[in-house]
Image (cartoon, rainbow, N blue to C red):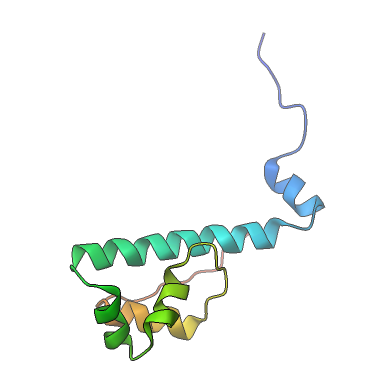
Length: 95
């Protein structure tokens, strides 16, 4: 006998608890931080070197790489991408 889902989806639960946007933001930030860190490894760049390329402080770069800090400006993201020779591609999709 096949089991059927007994309740709503996890996304529905997060919506009901008014947490979906926050959880989504943290998840996106974790992915972005991981991608930047991976590209730094690929290019053998230190935090100091990347911060210098971005014309920012190492403390600012540390905030960008902190996967638990969901605050991120598009300016900072674009600056990091450009410093790594990359570009940012954002897209809105249907929910």
